[in-house]
Amino acid sequence: MRNSLYLLIIVIIFISCAKEKVVTPSLEITTSSLTYKAGDTVTFNFTGNPDNITFYSGEPGHNYAFRDRTTAENDLQINFKTWVQFGMIYKNLQLLVSNNYSGVADTTNVRAATWTDISDRAVFSTGQDNTPSGTISLKDFADPKNTAARIYVAFKYTDYKKTQGQNRWVVRTFEANNISADGVVSPVAVLSSGGWKAFDFKNPASVWTVTTAQLLMFGGDKNADDNEDWVITKGLDPFYIKPDAGVALKNISTVLPSYKYVYTKPGTYKVVFDASAVRYNGEKRITKELTLTITP
Image 1 (spheres, rainbow, N blue to C red):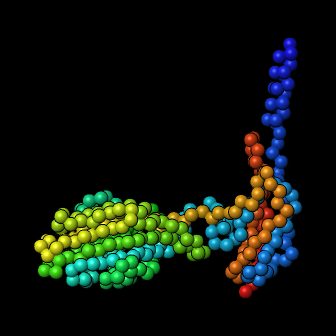
Image 2: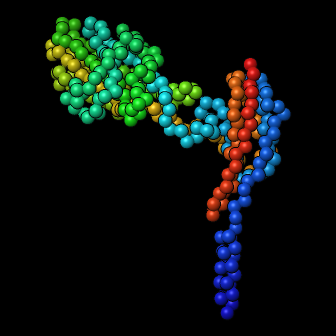
C-alpha cells in the first residue's frame, strides 16, 4: 500500500511538471542617451532577469538580422608569399583562375577549362624570400546568377632545358577570404586547407610537392627536360559568409544588472538583446532593440 502511495505521488509530480509552462522572459533596456561619441562607454541597464541574454552590437559580424545568413555577394580576395631561387630567374610562375573547371583531377579536364592569366595582379619573388603578392580581388570571376559555381586558383610553372638550370619556386603562404559589403571577413582557405592537386604536363621527373607548410617546385639542373606543372586549389565558394554572432552576456546561474560597451567607429547601430527562458520542456524568447547613433 505504501509503495502504491509513493508511486501515485511520483506520477502526480511528473504530470504537474509536464504541464508547467515556460514563462516568457522579462527584460527592459535603458541607456542614458541614444547618441554617443566614438570611444565613449555605453551602459545598458537591465530590468528583469531572463535565463539568458545575448548581445548583438549591430556592428559588422554582429548584426542580429544576419544571424542565419550563410551567403552574400562578397569580394573573394587572395594573397600569398613566394620565393624563387637558382638558375636564370625570370617570370616562369603564373597565377591562373577558372570558374568553369569541373574539379575532376586529371589533365584532360584541366585543359578543357577556361583559365585566365591574372599574373599581372600579383607581385612575385625575384629572389627575395616571403615576397608578398599583395591583395588580389577575384570578384569579377563570381557569377551572382550561378551561386553554385566555384572559383579555382592555379599556379602554373613552366621552364625549359638551359645551361643555367631551372628555377626552384616555393609558395610559402596562401590565404583566401570573402569580404562582404558590410565588411565581414569570412575565411575560405589557407595553404594547409587549400585542397591542392598537382598536375604534370611535361617532365614527370620534376613535379609540385604539396605539404601543409608549402608548395614546392624544385625544377631541375641543366640537363632537365622542358617542364610544365600546375597546382590547383579546391573550388572556392565566393558567396560563403559566416553567420553573424552575438555575445553571450549571462546564463541562468548569473544576475546581470547592466552591461558596458564601447563603439569605436561612428555610425548608426541597431542594437538587439536576445533574451530567452529555456526549460526541459521548451523555451521562449523575446528581443529588445535600441538604435544608437555614434558620432565622431
